[in-house]
Image (cartoon, rainbow, N blue to C red; front, top):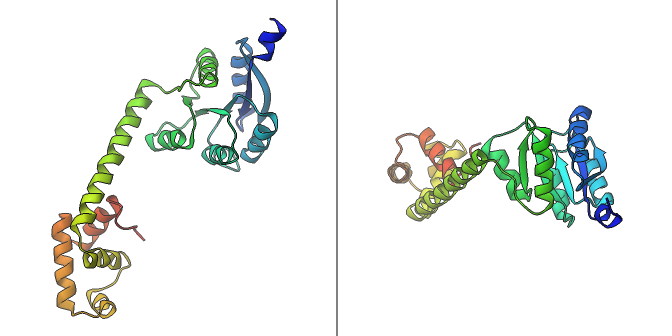
Length: 225
């Protein structure tokens, strides 16, 4: 390999709290001439320090670290202005985690069950600016994003339908207040409060306070205590 080719190798920092996993990822890198491992870390705080110090091209990152969650590592590195490309290699495979990783700026997501060749290929791809997600993960992400968009539309519609007093009533229900307590706080009659509650139920399509709370929470109108 020429000196020029060597200088253009992608610099890789491996972060995982299991030495054996780090060794597997190192082997995957050593089998590819374009990759060069410049360091390893087993903790999140250490990963941030080493990444800012070594300035690797690719950060291969586990999420389940002993001190700082991998997602927080990504967040802090991006906040510090690090241009590093991030490939997450983890045992988690739920949609919410994948979406969070993508939102924080990671460009790839791979399960630890991947082969050495697949790991090496993913590192090279991410280092070249290509996103690495499986077909199933992409489908899941699209469905999750679709669900978020749908809930956002529903929340906006519900918020526009509810009057200020109805939203206020929902908030007080979430605090566990009785009809009498709400009437005293709002300085209205209990019958008026009951009218607000009845209208709230009708607009949310529910029949009980518990249902109203769950519906309101699902629409982002209120937080469950």
